[in-house]
Image 1 (tube, rainbow, N blue to C red):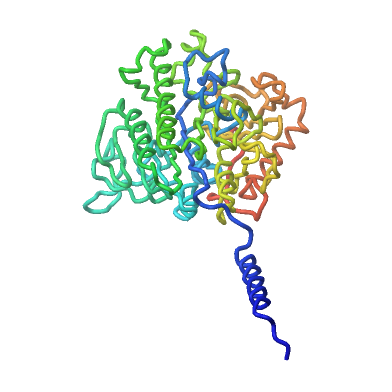
Image 2: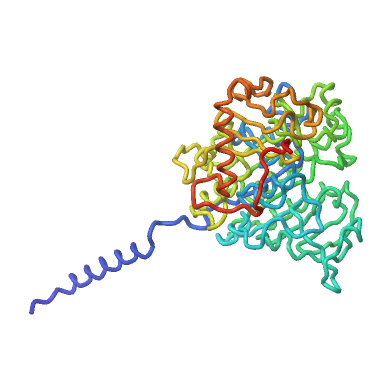
Length: 497
């Protein structure tokens, strides 16, 4: 019997080991240490025209930190929140799913109620935890949660308390939806109630909230120094939403009143985030996104600001709560050194629901099962690699405060409302039956939505309406197995009896 020489045996063993290791390993995966930190700074009611670099001719409020960030990264000029008001936008951002698929068909959450995010619903935070990230939420939650009596463990009722009492326990808040750490408040009317993790820890003056969140975010980032674990910081600020309370240090800075001053103080918070990232040497390996949950609120004194030459929505029609562009087209600036080209602009139409799939793509992981029904990765646009996206969809859905639907497909936009669908005149009850029941605009040549083509181009309007119906009925707007909405019936036409 012929025998192999010793060196031949060694050669065979090496080949077997190499082949088996390749089979077991599959496709090579990036080292976790190479995955970027992720920071999302979400302003509250900051209009598209409030940021100088987005509307240089009509913005009179200095925003030096946002402008500097734009020079270091990319501006998405056609970015949209999932709704024109707070709660549904936040739900869509964290879950990759439109909020109108839940019980919330209009308006916003008011607290003292079970979380709008179901316990088994993945969030960006819970997903990133599975990828080895440390996760923190500092700021405004506004997605409902309950308050329990710390002694009886029974739910507290809103009619019993104007403000959640100190010591109240929260069983379904951010730390139960994927975040390792939470410091902030629920929504503006409960801003005095300061929460840490799952408990109300104190009552504080509302003017202290923005400085508090700024400092907490700075401290969190500094605490990550020399820590190899990547982090995700979700910083949903409560400003420049009401109460509009710039601190004494910022009063008079803008020359446009309290709102302008508060915008400047909000921009300063972004500056402190950038400063902290630089201090810990995390500038290059951090994806930093600066954006807003919807358009500017009328509480800012829009008409007065306009007389002073400041257009809160820039070239867009409408503002917060509306189905028009000023309600949901938002500032969106991103920086990621060596991945995003500095001083660039991108005109791809993206939605906050796309954040989840994009982050999963960055981690080179699929999105969790039964999630991200309305999320498409825009990482190729973010990094200018122009590769084919993993999921496709036809268009995106807009939603107003009163639940009026709009649909965007390419340059075309259909609004299932006669007027703004929100707080800007003309409102629905100010228009009679002589006005077309819907609106159709070609945004490529009518960004200000002035020429309604609904009656003259019903073919295009019907095409968009058909696609909207399909996206609603299938329980998802992306390709994949049909999903289900949380409620049986979703009314598309709110004006019909």
